[in-house]
Length: 534
Image (cartoon, rainbow, N blue to C red; front, side, top):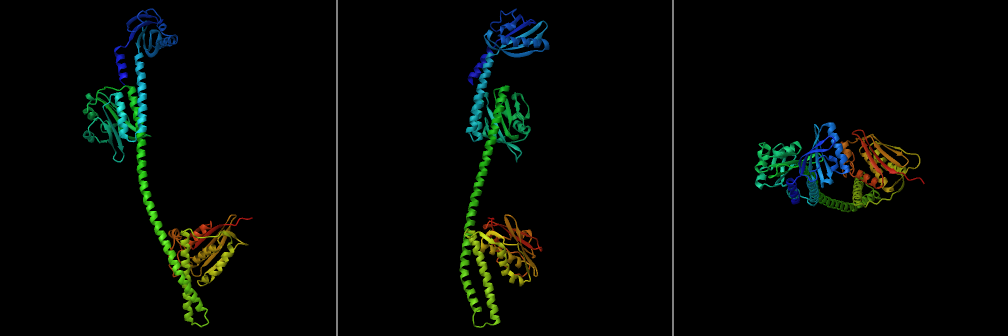
């Protein structure tokens, strides 16, 4: 940095320039001032002869252009014959030819090169800081230290937009006290320089602030700042905040320096956006971790409670099944006894057997659910004659249907209908579906059983003309122990038959479906794979 300033001072104190008059033949007719060695005795010489062949052609074309257009022209050219690397020439049209101003700009070229190299180093340093720092304050302080040495800066302010408040808030700063920073912590959009930049989304450059009475610069003026530049921080078209720099000693920035500040602000805006996204992701990740811990704890508690419930049901089912089997056994012995029983005694024993059978069926269903939940529901999937299984179940259920004057209609397919399933469990599914169709039917109603056989699957439909269900009930019907409010004093089931149907059909690789409307009956459908043809 010091080297650049020394070169600049040397150039200003020792610049070389010459003022000439040239005729239309491009001969030098008069030298008014001359501070360039080699030009003092150049009168009558053709001006293009003072330069190399390539440069001579360029110079001649420039003179011809000025002669034709009658307009001044300025350009840079190499001048090795004058022991000068670069000169800047200004050609002006005149009555009898041209006036020419020649200035040695070799030192200025060196300054430009040094500035370019320094800017490149600065940009590289800033890029490195952006990679190294994950905190905006550290990043800005480091950036400001490097930039202030290059541009002679004294203060910076970094505001971020608070979208909810509709204001900008001071997040980072240098060059003012903490108390003073507190007084400008919040700015309205349009307030002061930074608020104005945030509102209008464009950069502001304030010069000669010491002589300015503009309201927006009064705060930085009170700091002794005389030159101030503020840029909006934009990322993907969205305002993030503002970044401003001020100098107490400088009067203006060159265009090159303004371009540098703009590029640094653009880099910082992108970096700040990245840091803000990382911060948001960390917060969301922490929240998700807390939620995940809560869910895992809730899952563990639910699994523990479910396991305890299943173990309790399993224990109670086993404990109840033993005495029930004894009751059923002794009741059947009494009915088959050689000793005559009165009609009243027989009816009571039959009621004991019926109730005990129903309770035993409920216990067996509960045990099936327990086995299913524990993954121990053993199935043997093999070819099963679906039509024969349906006929067998219809035969068993016909007495229950007759007691309600319900007609069982069977629309069988011709020949065997072979599907893949478990022989015993498939009959259990069919019995549950028929039992539901009868229990939830109307007196004098009907139950229809029919098939849809396709190339790969067979669907069994069990349709009743009963009370039906609404949509809310359809969503709950497969839940354990849920029963539809029938509004009639029909025989109640266990409430877990359809839960078992769903579990068994799924385990056998099939699908199930239910369609129903209130007072329009219900259709249960199960679909199983056909036995492949050999």
